[in-house]
Length: 192
Length: 266
Image (cartoon, rainbow over all chains, first blue to last red):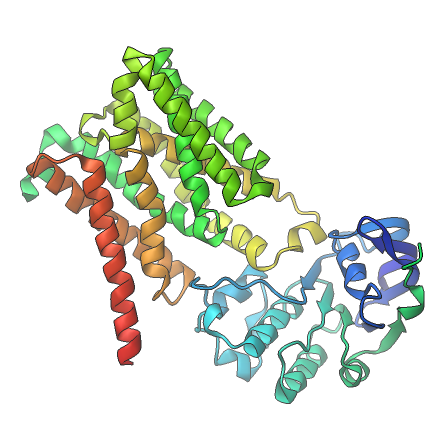
């Protein structure tokens, strides 16, 4: 069953950046979006989350579809006492699914975590949330090879009905993590 | 000195101040989370000005406080794009109105000083009812706000992506915050209220291990500083607000310094 269906949508901010995008995301699917820098991959995710503009086309969502969005640079406040446990609670994440490497960080403050630790925690918060669709923007940012392996494991161990759309410049990761890929390069419309 | 705390003559001021010293640090923790702590000063000035205008016109405190809070929330929304500059503009506008009305109204003049310096020992039942009416719902909303306001901060975009009715929690927080600042300013004074908003949370954020712990710790610091200030101001015949600010500042700096020292020793 389709969680999300895009039909010929054109997205951007003041002007269109990406045109005539058509795809659907089914339950359990991990869809990888690739394309050259600046082709509009992040804009497309932002359009799906309501932060960028959809100029035309049809977006059909499953009724009551819950979406989680992990941004390219997830916000983190300096000198702010939020524990990793509390951070996960904000997204109602199922902590029983917490991988051992993240379990060790559970009682640490979010502002004391390394960039890679925080990245993994932030992705886990989205994947373990009740959301049916998770949007991941450059999830391998700040991750070392062990972190990338853990990320692949987290994607594999998520709830089977959850759909994921991810953007990454890391081709090996995209091929290992996704069930299907779409190249957006040809749909970029800088000339419009 | 402790006898002063239980003197029936000062029971109402003690209770009003206790109420404020519990709730304002909680408000401060949220404002730090939203990076809006300067907004407290802007809102406090606007609400103080509205209350002074209300006093000059003979309005009851509850009515002028509510009107001031609504104006402050509207001004905050309008200046949201400007960030800190917007809050500074609110502060300057409130300050100008406050002192112009004070200078041109015999009724408002005494209140002008009271709002600025604090009039905790002169407060009555009206102030007590006003602050209680706001503090109770404010405390009751904290668990509901905590999850939603912090999620908005750390997972920005979630509310929009899911078309959540975010105005409910953002709007209720803004309105109750403004009311709380309005009524605490009327009793404790502008700077004492502002200090109770920003300093306790700042004092404990460095060493608290969790959000919940930081809320409890900031309330403890707020209450202790208030009780000490209350006793010193009464026994030494000092103005309350500067004593409150000085004690809170000392406690906050000591808290931050001791954390730094312990961190270095470890």
